[in-house]
Length: 114
Length: 114
Image (cartoon, rainbow over all chains, first blue to last red; front, side, top):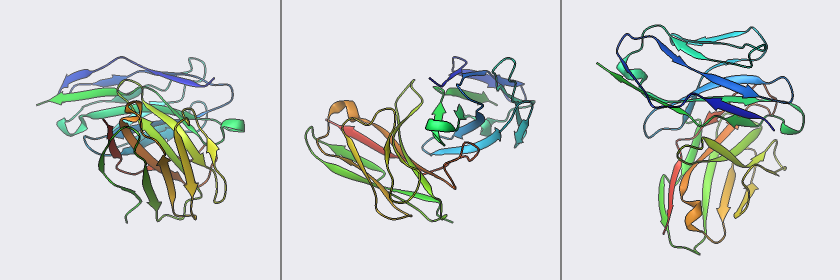
């Protein structure tokens, strides 16, 4: 079945450090890929997405590139801020019988210190 | 711009009690979803409704029932609560059930079953 694997956390960084959160996937079809962010006490918010191979999603300084050859969708940011502290979820969606349903990774907790 | 509204935000139940979690969206979205979030396990799909008048089981449907009351509302019912159903429950909606659409999430219901 479809699955998403994220790097183990938690991740702790100093402000202005470079961020990478790894995400790899297994899917039977050609998935769309997503990153969601969850701030403390809140629901998930869509951060960025990519719907086909080699697409780059970007938002708020975060980027991720859909790599079909390595089945990966790693999240990066060049300079993190304290306000980026949150839980980050990688997710995929395929068509067919799984039409529209999102499959999530386990989440990666990011803490950024001043 | 309310988006997806969930009620209640917190609930404590005794084993065997029943309750209904309410969800409403005001974005005229066609598809709605119920997920549960447990530590280290990401989000798992309980039930979904691809369009008004249809509902289908997700990954973990046992012990739950749903009702798509109209296009706006999608409720989740626990008929006889068990401690294993202690979790944070999220409702989400999307414009259509296709694989390219992201979700809008509610802020969650934190349920404790004692």
